[in-house]
Length: 234
Image 1 (cartoon, one colour):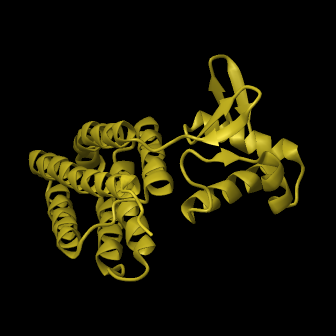
Image 2: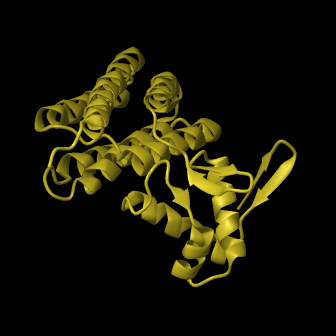
């Protein structure tokens, strides 16, 4: 895996470097690492039973993805969560996802419609209680399937990165029972408009859907921040 940034080539070997990268992502998902935390590359190397080199490779790649920042002579830190970043993620989704709808409708065929319907039904059938992670992943899969049908690889890659940040850093967009019902209905309406070639209808519903979810997630984030700032009494 390789990426170019400012003339530099960022590479990560497929073996230990890839394993370290996946291991760190798994720790983020399981909340074993949290935003703002200092990362001990030595502890990670010991945990993954490998040398420091592949761990550093993985951290450099995650720095490129904006999960990690490097401070000279101090080491690596997970980037802190912030209201501004969360708002920007949803604002980008608001701009990006509806803009792909015309191409999605243009390129939609029977196989594509079948894939999109399957993704929608998988999300609708996901558990609402207990294992909410399943619902989160199925939700993301619906949106990425919808985007992938537009045949716009660069924009799809950007969207994948946005969803990565949302899930690994902010826990996705799990909500109340009422909000889940609303999301389900908005997915159904979006699918119907796309399947019937209603570009304007699909763009309008998808735009409103992203903003509705943004408001719910922001409200939850604010509540969590307020709870953390409350004084503890013994």
